Image (cartoon, rainbow, N blue to C red; front, side, top):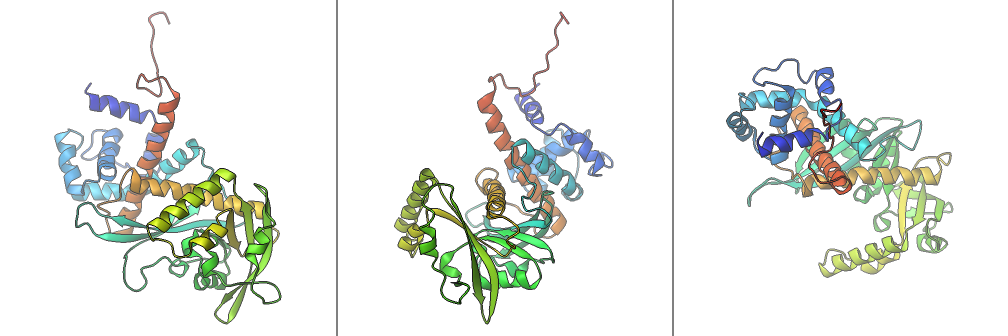
Length: 370
């Protein structure tokens, strides 16, 4: 057995135990035309999404390695057929990595929306903005769009997502803008969004400017939670909402202050003093009614952040490149494949620190004495 084959067998030991059953159950493998086994099919697809090779390059490498004899078109079709399979594998690895995907807010359909910049490989690689939406706990990608980074309708905005009545949207501070929040409310949905105080004109119940800084001074101890009713001005309309806040730990406050100082040195932040004023707290704006506790709202935002961290690893660990932009199904399958590689890397790092370094995760030895 070659070192590459040994590494592959070690990697298989990290897969969910039912990974081959899921391939058949989701009809990702109706027949093995051009492949000798499900292993070789999956190994070939990981060459594409993991190594960043194009479909044509992957087909050539797979043929040289004896894994497959398929064309780039056949490989693309296989990738499309594997969308559900790859999504379920990601969901299993999320659970193994102890990330709970079950929504804390019960009785609502929960979606996570986000956007990120990606750059294709090479010095002249194109820069794109990826907009996506995931449902919890299924991780089903129900919206996926690539736009340029400049021009009209290319920025992060809630209005681009087809929000349905009764949904709860989880979003970060990049979506903390009154027009987007008004668009969600007008579609009879609710939102939990990280508050950007500089872009949100908040009012109290009497119509005066909400004294956010003064209210935050009431939260002096770590873990203390505040919950205040506010109104958000959206043009001529007012949106009823709440501010939920929790004071960070001292270590988290120091990290936030160092990050602000670093961004100030890089001239990436304009109002450093105002940013430091809010650095001691996590601030969330929500339109959910008071029957949902502030603790549940803040915990929901924490789970959104766990998924955000995983997608950050897509850029830092497995790289985003050669994105198939011509078909939504292949794009989603490719994204799930990248996510699977990122989660697998996380599991490999965790297990590598916890087991004896002989190279195997599952050690099944046979003994002559048995």
